[in-house]
Length: 262
View 1 (cartoon, helix red, strand yellow):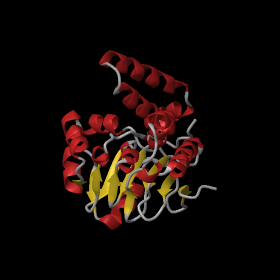
View 2 (view 1 turned 120 degrees about the vertical axis):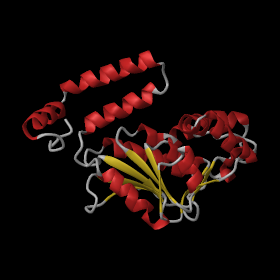
View 3 (view 1 turned 135 degrees about the horizontal axis):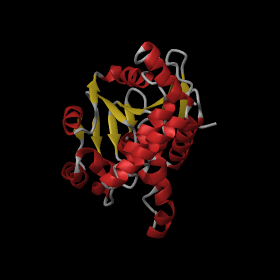
């Protein structure tokens, strides 16, 4: 059984799974947490009852970064063997082919922010502090931060955050596009559940195809991206949900289809 990271569901929010980080006091992302986080992401991917995922660290903090005590005596040779594993674990949320949202309260720093960057949406409390302070330790973000942050807020703003290591408050984070919504701290989780809950009856294969098209398209030229979209679009005509959705639209108008996920 996992000790620090669990995947939870509730009858009050059907179709929504919560990946909960719980390693007090700051949810430091040591190797065990990284392993459990990746396992939870895989489980959320595999479970057909989960249509969308919330990533949450509790009411006080999302995560305040990796566990530096584990790294302080590591050599180049040792880190070279595990850096890829760390990057995959912290980026595992991005591999879930379902809508994902990070619910950020308090600090999301270093690896904690990198976990949140893997989500499709980020909702923060107005007390949130976000940052990538690794340069202050003589290293750089190693869990995807240099890449996902720059793609999200642009290279200049990403470099400013990475070079200085400064903490960004919620309002600035909203202004630069680092987060998508700011609410009162005690409303963060509920807001994330509400967003994720929209998709409990959605055409899950279509959402997965849309997510794949956007994410893969960001890394290629426009012509290649359009080809990815073309293939994903055409493939959906092999699904039951495509026929269900179109037949329902013709008979009853939009928004009334009962999808099966097949």
